[in-house]
Image (cartoon, rainbow, N blue to C red; front, side, top):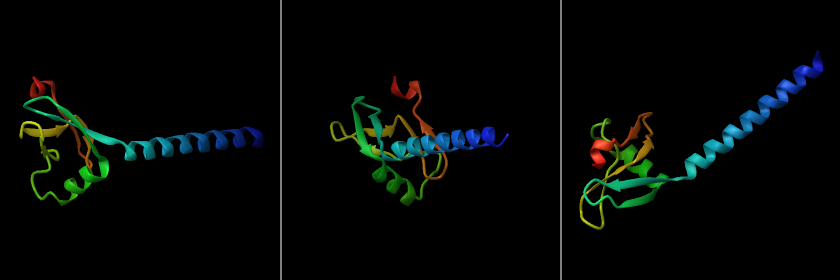
Length: 96
């Protein structure tokens, strides 16, 4: 029986390492924002977005927003998991 336990422990460690690696990759990714007016997209570093999210004292139901450099409209994240545990995802009706 000890051999089966060793194999299970080894497999658990492999899964744990893979999940940690996936989490690190997710943290390093940029957040894609889209302008609600002209539909241009821009990738903004996750660290910048998280900084704005932390220091924003406003409504938590509203995602971090930026101003579009092209038209001056409002840019929102297409999908972003915030530092407060809220996942923001833009709906198709906001894009149309």
